[in-house]
Image (cartoon, rainbow, N blue to C red):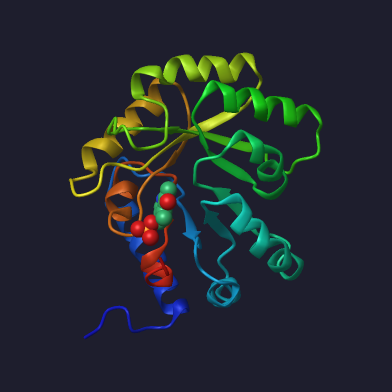
Amino acid sequence: MNTFAESPQQRWQDISTRIAQARTRSPLAAQEVTLVAVSKAQPAEAITPLLAAGQRVFGENKVQEANAKWPALREQYTDIQLHLIGSLQSNKAHEALALFDVIETVDRPSLVETLTKERTKNTGRCKQFLVQVNIGEEPQKGGVMPQDLAALLAFCHTHQLPISGLMCVPPADTTPAPYFALLHKLAKEHSLTELSMGMSSDFETAVRLGATSVRVGTALFGQRAA
Ligand SMILES: *Cc1c(COP(=O)(O)O)cnc(C)c1O
């Protein structure tokens, strides 16, 4: 049997159920876990069935692509919440603050400075910020190195950028659990409550280890066009 043969609504139901089950089995699990549907590289036609099913929280990794898709969908569904999960260039900060409700990829002092400056103009909708941690210390990956996290959080604090949690993408092709556990530990050390971790292949593990949101793309939408 092809496990991916169902409708988008059925996949959505299935993933929601799996999140709920993973949660009930683990003492570390959060009270509530938000499913962020990662709609990057998906056209509006792929997104509307999930909106019709009731999904309201979506993740995009590119500011421009998101700005081309979401304003029209927001006219129809006014309670959509958008998360930026890709790296943010400073020259797109203004646009990102206007479009996204949550920016999950704060990762360097220069970006903090730009976001703070833009926020003083008071025009954006974004109220929530997470710091992305390069949890596997991979040179090619975004995120602050774990050993630099404390300094970056202090910098955010002095710049009055409110950080509510941490986000990570563990190294590919290895067991993610130790990385999720480390992110959880770092968040606790800094009294941060939000933990964005877990994707299509490992969201149940992430939920068991305390994720408050999981970012699921292919398991919901199918493969992305390259
Ligand atoms: C693409 C992406 C996801 C979703 O990945 P899937 O494996 O398709 O579920 C989650 N988080 C980030 C940061 C991504 O770039």
